[in-house]
Image 1 (cartoon, rainbow, N blue to C red):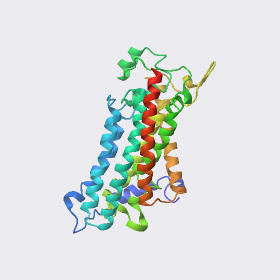
Image 2: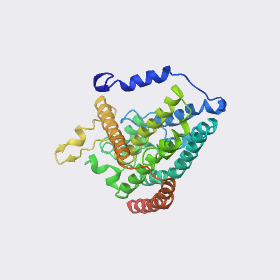
Image 3: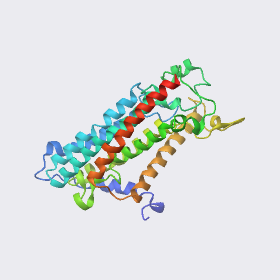
Image 4: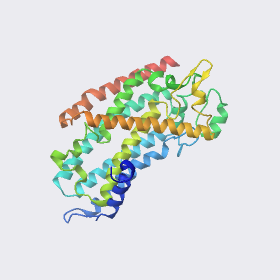
Length: 330
């Protein structure tokens, strides 16, 4: 509460402090692995933001296989975590990295299965196209023009003029509600957030795989963790919660969805789209923080049981149901 108005500048003060701190490398550490590890973790996580469609016209790279790229590039942070734990030459760092790698690899499976459900019904790996399918605009704009302006395969996308929350995937296909729950739980484990913060258990491992880091390298590891939280929050909003589309539906002659969405490609459309997507992502981050305050840390056996005995079989069942749902839609 001391730095800035009600402590609003505390984050800036922490950043300046960490930039000025000494970069300490333990004498027994493997410098070739120890020093680049935080950079690899940082790059792997933040490269995922490159394909996120922030608004109806601002799509980042906009590649057709954007979802596949995101899942592939983010998984590389496992290599950085292994390098950090092994290169530190510390038992606490090594135990933390082994825990983190086992946890991330285990929970990538149910997370990917939940994402696969969306891909099967949407028939696309293009994140912008998946968002458009949860809105109203392709039915109102010439499909060829949308394809030209925004680089997505607009032809054949099913839409409704109601819009709003009723066209989000979790309501359009009710099985997606369970897929989103699996996605959210698995994303907490991917981010090492409570109750899955076993790799950073202070009472056991002091600080986990980054215990030997200091200064800016420690800051990069922490920034990567919070960046991962925001990335999965954006991805969950895009896949299940309508992305940049408005949550307000058109009710009869009251066109709430039209008014609070803005036509794609216009300045109003950009502003409304960014507002809704960022708002949904920040709300998800708030739920992640709420879970951290509420639930105690799991044991390692409970963590693995949840993934392999419950979430993964449930994810496989949802994939089968998604295939059946898609066949009935044709």
